[in-house]
Amino acid sequence: MAQRPTGVKTSEASASPARFRSKHLLAIGDLNRFEAEQLLDRAETFEPLLEQKVKKLDTLRGRTLINLFFENSTRTQSSFELAGKRMGADVVNMSVKSSSVAKGETLIDTAATLNAMRPDLLVVRHGSSGAAALLARKVDCAVINAGDGKHEHPTQALLDAFTIRQRLGKIEGLNIAICGDVLHSRVARSNVALLNILGANVRLVGPPTLMPTGAERWGATVHHDMRAGIKDADVVMMLRVQRERMDGGFFPSAREFFWFYGLDEDKLKFAKPGALVMHPGPMNRGVEIDSIVADDPKISLIETQVRMGVAVRMAVLEALAEPGSNQETR
Ligand code: NCD
Image 1 (cartoon, rainbow, N blue to C red):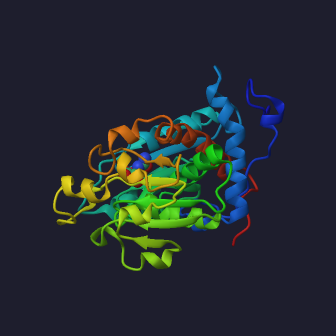
Image 2 (cartoon, protein in one colour):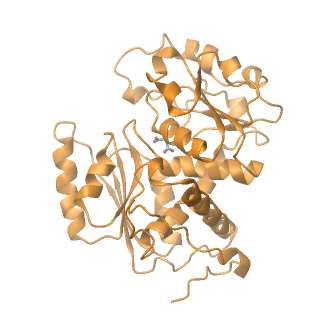
């Protein structure tokens, strides 16, 4: 079977698929530095493909990818769907309404049903932390965590790292500030873990009410003053204020949150000149980020992040579907 992408230059297509030791991608801890860098290298070979007229490979022809989303998602679900299709896989989208009464039971029942259909790859998003790991124990195929509660969202961190590397040429030694609602953010947890593996200096910035206890032990410095936290940063990564995960008043008002922690031109002046701005989306404009900053193509990488997401997920799907790539246990 031809493995070369249609229309992609031989040199671009020749880098070999990334190899994983772990059967699943449930958290950044499943990867070491070598594996993470191999994935980013491989994503780099897929990225030019997305600009071409014909964007399809046949690497995963005959394989089945099931997208199982228990939470609403626009960009992550469509990104995995596109990535799967561009790799030539058959993609099935299942959006399941989450039952708050019997979440565990629903999940296990669903897992058994899906397993009977013999998929090769299962992408899962669920509101409960640990759901992807539970599912991975119940099915035979590779499971990719597309966000589980407040726990992890590893492909988001990989696409963020890829975006930074493509723009700045490296990650090692960069000052990267992750700001806002850290407490409820799986994106922050995965990003701190990956950026640490890749050698960045990571800071977490947010009000004490939205900073998890012990965050300073994650491998980041913790700041409650936004200006001090983003001082000399190369990259300022904003997080969405996750109201749907809040069970009380974590800050007095959106207006006050913006005053202290919203990224606007004024606060951004404290970062390095030319510092880049990121956000995983969806954004609350005027709450955690000002539109002037978010929409400035010279500094905002927000749209680039979405594009890079497809290339990174293609590399992840390929690595986990590749026979022999994940046979060793850790
Ligand atoms: C993130 C998520 O769902 O965890 N978004 C995303 O995947 N694009 C972040 C968020 O919802 O705030």
